Image (tube, rainbow, N blue to C red; front, top):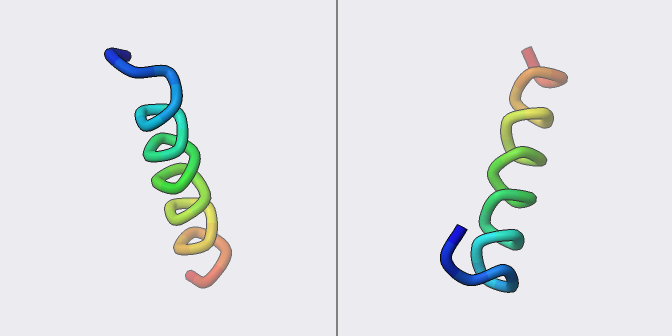
Length: 25
């Protein structure tokens, strides 16, 4: 991770998006 701020936000968003997709399926 290069920047703790931006990278963490992107990772959290991606993880939440994947979880929502899994729950949707």
